[in-house]
Structure formats: structure tokens, C-alpha cells
Image (cartoon, rainbow, N blue to C red):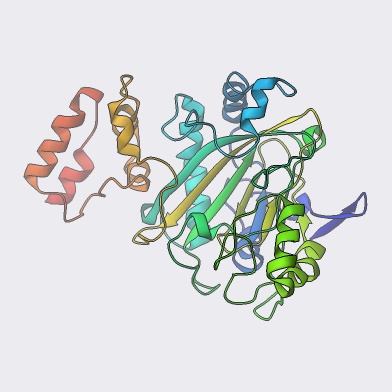
Length: 350
């Protein structure tokens, strides 16, 4: 699974390609379930990804400008949060191949998925920062604290899939994600519970690697030693290509590495959870909030989406107890102007 390049262990693309039919193979699924990640190429249409990149380049400032300094951390300032003005962003968010891949990883159907995150983030290459929250050179961590009110369940019962879609080549700007593979149930890098990280169990949230590790050394020296010995020493670098997709988990140790000086790396970040896991929160304002927008974008998306795509957004599926002749007529009236087809829901009433 590894290749050596410049003395740095990395995920090998030869073991991470998507199958020709667009579905993940057993190797990718098992890697995600057992080791905590899968790096996949050729899953999404290149033309759609290129359109998304152009949309992003039309919004984000060029590297080295004063305006770029406002984007040194996370988020797009709502610009690319689903539903976005970029139709390519929305199309990728609900792309059937992506939804099927997530469903295959979790071992469920697409109808059992729920979207909880979709945004396009920039990351600029710049020098050291005095900001403890800066994400240029991230500390190693797991993502569950800002997605879940609780703690991830036992390893063999994953409840969500996190996704990074890369819109650059690694050689162009670096900034690869590093992951720590889980090597079986007795792996010392994956003790239970996951509390050996800033921002959890009373520890302050510190994002910058050097500052975070100094903080841990002062406040939890045994955890600081664990992190150096079992996490940083074993991280693998995801040497992505344009369009590569990294699937990982809420309980996977990982971190963002620095982007090459003067470069801009663009990624779309997404998360899908299993239906019924209400302790996993949507990271953005609810999709319905965008119904106030003058462009009627969300209404159009609901009307034009497939039954499965609507379901991923929380729209009741055909046969759900919500649907009665009265509610069906009411929802149809709400979306009739946008051309919604309610026949699958009507058929399920019979």
C-alpha cells in the first residue's frame, strides 16, 4: 500500500483506483472500513470538476494578495455551502456515483444517507502564523468533536463518511492530507476513547501543529508522547491528483499539511451520515434556510432532484408515514411551479 517518495510514506494510487463501472471495489471499501480511509481516482466526471474549479477560482483571491489573508482557515464564507450558486458544486454534492460510494462504504442504500456538510475550502501557502487556530500545518486529530454531540461508536459500526475532493494536483501545490492507518483492533494508535487531542475532554482547541503539541506537552505529557510515537511517526500522505477523492471517518487520525508557498489548493469537503443518527449535526445553516433566497435555487433543486437525492437532504421518501393524500397535495402545490414530479410518492400511497 505504500510508496516511498522523497523519503516520505504515501498512499499508492495503484491500490486506490475506482473500478471502471464507477463503483468502489472491495479493496477500497475494506480499506475505509478497516484502515480508516480510501483514496480513489476517476470517480467523478472531469468536466464537472473542472467547472467547479473555475467557479472557485472566480471567487477566491489570488495567492499573495491581501484579500487571500481572509481565507487562511476554514470555510467559504457561505459562498460554496450547499445549495451554492455554483451548479457544479451542487451537482457534485448529489452526484449518483458519490452517493453510491458512500452507501457502499456504510453498507446501506442511498435512501439511508443524509447530507450533513458540503463546502468548498481554499488553502493558501504562506509562512508561519502566530494564530493558534491557523490550519496551515494542522495538528493531528479526529473530526468527530465538531460533527457529533457524542463519541464515535465502536470501530465496526461506522455512522458517517467524510470526503475531500481535490481540485489540484499534488505536485502543483502539495498540501496533502495525512492519515494514520488503523492496523487491527489492538493498534496502539487507536485507543478507546479518543481524547488524546486538543479540543476534547477539557483541553483547549489549538489547531496549529507546533502550538498544539507544545500545549499537549504542558497539559497532557503522556498524550503528547503518544501522539509523537504512534501518530506523527506513522502518518501516510495522500498524494492526490486532480479529481481524487479521499474517503475517511470521524474516528480516523489525520491532518492537513502545508500548501506550497504562493500556491492555492482547492477542495470540496462533504460528510454523509446514516439516517436516524440525530446526534450528528449539519455543519451549515439548514438547507431550508436558503428558501428565502430570491433565486429560488433550493426549490428548483428539490423539484429537479431524483427521489434518492431528495432523500439525502431529508425529504420524506415514498411510503414514509408523513405522506397522506393531504400532505402530498400540499407539497405538490408548494413545488408545482418548479416542475416537481410527485408520482413516485403518489404510487406509494396506494
